[in-house]
Amino acid sequence: MIIVFSLAIHILNLPFEITMIIFEHYLPQYPRRPLAVDLALFGWICGQWRAVAFAAPRLWRAFTMNLNAMMISHQAKALQEWLRRSGTLPISIDILLPADQPCCLQEMNNIVSLILAHSCRWEHTRIGLMLPFESLRLLQGRMPVLRSLIIGPTEVPMPPPASPISLFGESPCLDTVRLSRCFEPDYVTLPWTNLTWIEADFLYPEECVTI
Image (tube, rainbow, N blue to C red):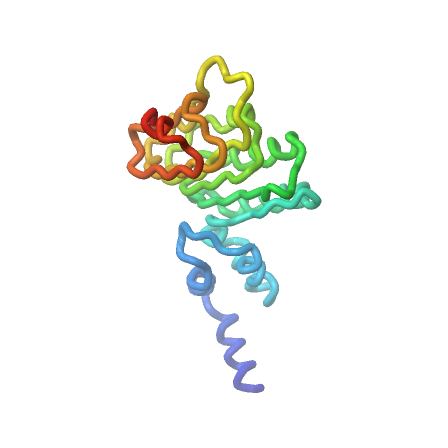
């Protein structure tokens, strides 16, 4: 017991920077995203470790959030705090709403607005929300470091839009895209000429030719 206590004292006396590096090695290598419980663990050990974790933006630059319709207001606050802790670093984010967790449009738009406030820092992004087609118009803006993207609306617009929605045109680094769910290349345009990898779940051969 004395030996264990002595080791604990030595660990707690480590400099901030060394403790932070140890924490980083516990998490998956960026841009892979840890589970929320992995990050929460740092705050459960002691106040000193919690202070280190909360003050280290590199620990918060990659995250996954599986939304729950019953908890979405609390999750929105957690998402906002997560983004704040990541500072100014590029981020890897995965926001997912399962099909069996329907939320109202306003709640979805609130989540989108939260992450869009940091779109200039998006580097690896997956947006798995149950977004209607028109909400895709929110996903516009400058995203200078965005490299990989997974996206897809949940419905085909009826009637079709008068002109296609142009998305991610200000994303010069974007080279990898996966199109999930109901993606209509006639209704949505991406910066196709920049891409070196495209993966699609639900495209007809003629749509692939169009792209």
